[in-house]
Every structure is written in C-alpha cells, then in structure tokens.
Length: 162
Image 1 (tube, rainbow, N blue to C red):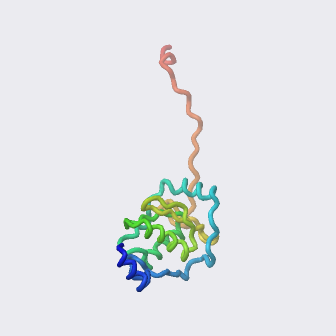
Image 2: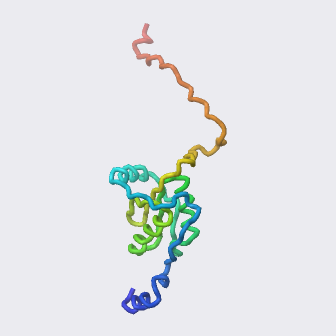
C-alpha cells in the first residue's frame, strides 16, 4: 500500500480493504465463552497430532467469508484439530485471519507456519468422535479380530536332510 492508500483506509475504515469482512458471530456454536490458552505441553502435543493432517479448508482471494467460517466451524465440530490453507500472499492478513477465526469460534490457535494455520477446539462431551471407517453403519458392532496361535518355527535346510 502506498501512503495515499493508508489515508484512504483511515478515512473509510478497514472495511475498504480487499478480503476484509466484518467480524462474524456464529450462534449455533456449543461454546459460549472464549477458550483458555493452551499450555506449551498441550501445544506441542497438538502440533505432533497435526503434523500428518492435510488442510481441510482453503481460504481464497475472497478472504474470510461467512460461508468459509461456517465450514471451519463444521470441521472443528467433527475433527477438533484442523489445518487451514490461506492462499493470499499478505502476511499481516494471514496473521489477522487467525484471530478472526479463533475469536467467534472459541478456538485456539496451535500453529501458524507460512500459509498453513492449525486450529484446535475440543469436541463437546455429548458429541461422539468422528468415525474413521466409512462403510459401517453407526449401530453395527465390529467383530473382534481373529487371533492366531503362534506359528511353528521355520525349518532350516538341515532339517530336511534326514
């Protein structure tokens, strides 16, 4: 931005910036208060859990829209820990998006590296964990795995010579 543009922003407010949307509140979120900050040990454990995850939400050139925020809320409800990819090149905008995402959703930022954001919000106690197996119905019980006995020791060449 040039100096003249900053004067324009100061006169009109931040709403004139591209990709900026006013703060959004989601009323159907099960959390009513802001989340407590994570301890370093919790943050380290969450970083380890998030290492193998792929981004589930991508924020494009339109910025943080209400639909994107709703999708992030749905993803947090089912997964607790998600990665978000921000496609913009502006570092300050990405840092601002972390706060704009975490405040209305009562989530905690775990990590922000480059264009990847990691966000955590614990699942409420009344919601079950997301099922990892896709084909089984919710009410069916899984069969216990068959246990095999110990295999016989492998025969050596000398055992065949009789």
